[in-house]
Image (cartoon, helix red, strand yellow):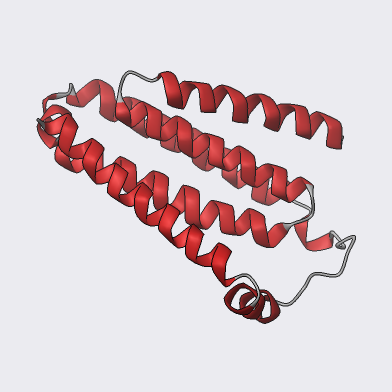
Length: 162
């Protein structure tokens, strides 16, 4: 079962990473990049690194990819307003219903409450203390990488507008 999950995650991650690089529209590239980040979080979950999986989802999918999407959509607002309202609205409602039903089924069929972790998890306070003391250089480097991603998103949005 783990091999099948790994293969599915590998295919999703690699294909979405290629789509992120090859997308002609920045918005589609950002969506593919977010999907690639979700695949990487899935790899962390397969390794029983739940904290890293949640961190990946929160920081990269929740912050970076969404920031890129919002920046591009706000800067190129006129293009989105000119789009065909009826077709896009119906497609959006359909996608929202499918996603809501899928998530509802996953929550209903989930056995997360009954899963016993294979290894004892380290407390979050210990992880936070180690990040700020022993691994401070990696923490600062990560902060600089995230800052450069934000700056890159702003530059991309400004280039698209001009």
